Image 1 (cartoon, rainbow, N blue to C red):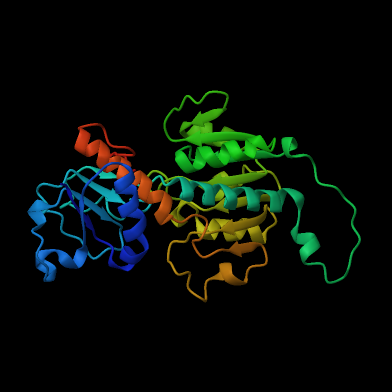
Image 2 (image 1 turned 45 degrees about the vertical axis):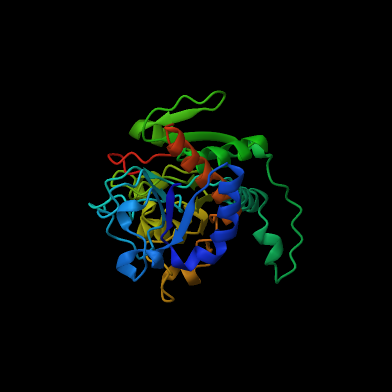
Length: 317
């Protein structure tokens, strides 16, 4: 019977029932224990007897060295940049690709894309009661650049394409995706951004992706373009973004993630008329659907099969 350590005390009550059910449905008889039950936390579970660890970068567990038998560390977040640099974490690491998280991200991206595409702000904020019957172009006339073609990026890109947006994807490395135009590398980034009306950033945070949207790349966009960032705060040069908004190059920025969170109350994004701040709510891990994925990875571990969504430690995601 595998021992599974749930190492995020704040989420124990949320996950305990759905995870227990998911493990049962997967045919896994397991001993699910909370972080406080580990011996060095005053409990009676020996770390060397733990087979699987469920954690998140905000969890109090920081030393993975005593968990010598652990087959997998399963992250509960999609982002892993806060945990990959932990030198004690030598076990295989899997990132979360929760279907519920993906659905939430798609909804956020589609919602803000349609908001910009249809120009909804001019109707919702219209104190002078201006009657402007100008119709927007069709979605197929809007170029969208999707930066990042992982699980979240590709799902969002496909949803926009289903609405007839003209979507081009970009990733750092080549991808061959059937019936979907993909660019890669620095030249490909410029091609994807050139004339784009909407840009969505869903890249992981790595040294190579930091400030991927900067003064030079923002200048490639169509006049009045919208930037949507539900990925990671450091993907955008904040000063370059504000300059482009202030000087009319960009029309709007919808930002869900930031270099510092919570976003400081004196940050200029809060008061800027062309910036929408959402408090890191574009996508969240849902315990019910995440538990099914966790149970499947544990089933695979017990069956000697390959784990899903393993992190490449060299790439950092």
